[in-house]
Image (cartoon, rainbow, N blue to C red; front, side, top):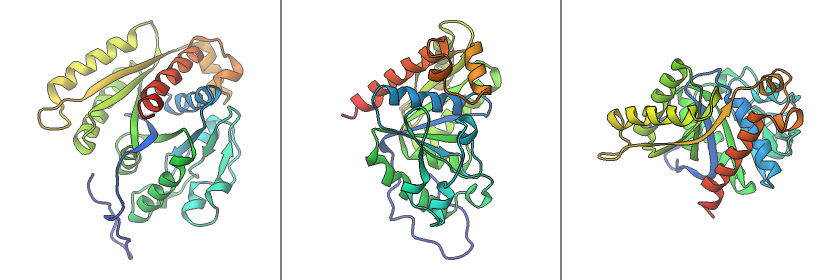
Length: 278
């Protein structure tokens, strides 16, 4: 990645801090907003917790926040408070209804919406401290390819890219994969297609995107990037009602198609991350 921005005031030496993917840290990201990324992240965290995993879901949407609304949580301490020394990690981490831990970002914090050297250092310190305490740390990033989003993704060993079948979402998903391949030399991205209408839609979409990637995108000279289709999450009324009611699927409709799809996603993620890195 390129060097951190911002030049005002004294800066810490960030070059001495290794920037590398951390094992069992998973970035859940998207090319555009409105694809249900945070809903997928929250329900995936609950599904993993129900499978016996110790899970932390971290709101990496610095400057804004989504998780408190999606999970109907009352925010007390946040990542902002940890960054500024007003709270330690133990105070800022809270328990979600689904049996997993949550660290919220904090609302309207413009000073943390840019990747300054201080934000970079503090975020890296927090993630490096948290990763050994959990089986999985899920980073719910912002959408798009801002410097904060790309830095968050750079810390993860596994990237889940959430898209929908809409053309604009697929175009932005392609752009995101292209940037991750070019800047971070990613050789594999996992795709989750949300709001699918028919069985097999996501696999067909992944195949189409892979054809375009094979033609136009390389992560290293002579090496392409593999888009691994990990799951489809079908659109259904139960998922819409859960999202509107700010509830997790396992509480409102555990047997609905979208809930079962998230359970399958959790199983595949375990195989991808936990078993592969055991």
